[in-house]
Image (tube, rainbow, N blue to C red):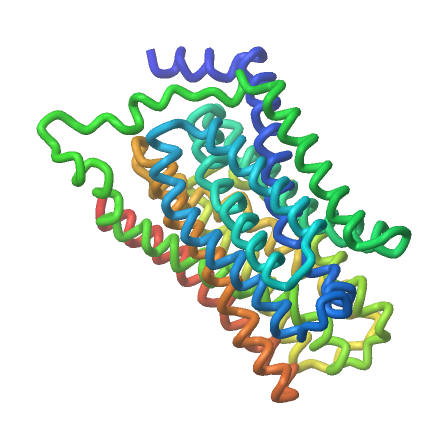
Length: 410
């Protein structure tokens, strides 16, 4: 009977529904990442407009991710209680409100307030997305679903500066942010139009087991060691990513005399290659049993290249290619990374588990700039690359430790 059920689940009609759902979730995830970079590309203009320091502008990003972390943890419980669809709509609406609020801001404190609004909206996406994918997409297509999810996130990061900076140069930073708000509203309208495909029956997710206490049924997942190992994994993953995004191109420029215009494209090359790696990673993740080995291989390659960029004599023109290879390795590991959490999650606590686990991303992104920025201030760019490599090595150990803990519990 189970084989017949699996076959029926993989029927063409279900495949089309899965593809549609994956597309909708991926589109929303791209907007989440897009919104994380609403302000950063505009810092030069905002600094002049509001007469503030770069440290004060950086504090806006810290506010965003601290709020997002807190909301992400709580929203996992809300998703399990009320379902992902209304929470997704609320998140998109808050991001749109924040973008328009940024555009209308007349003081630094208004920017800070709308950073809180944006962080609140951003905090809902991982619990929403992974609850929908894990509970509605057929098991045989989950690797591809996670691959698309990662790709759209990378494309969202790439879209923000590509859209905001040209609009600012052509018109103003206020017009650019208003255009960003309009884009988010458009995505919200599309999600509303296809809202039936985002529906999910939530009754099994919050029903307590017979004879179990309410508190025990809702919080029992916190006693699963693998959940906290996954949290640690995503904390270190975010630290590595933040180091690459914020300081790696400048560190490479200082170490290898890379021309400024070449250094400027390194991050774009990294993100594009990471997206390509996620495509391949989606096929490799079709077998969940090997996800830890794929994560180890992908981040092993990335860590080796980071050490090369930090301590080897690398020609300047080879630096973008090495960024691309590093992004490819990290990208290949992406879908298997998400399956680590899937395999560690109780079926009745998907939103809660992802809310807690993925809060590690926000904490890592809030902490890493302080560490790597200090190394840059101390004029130690090679230590930035060493730090990135060390964190990536910790990721490999964390992935295998998740498997060890999961097997011990089972």
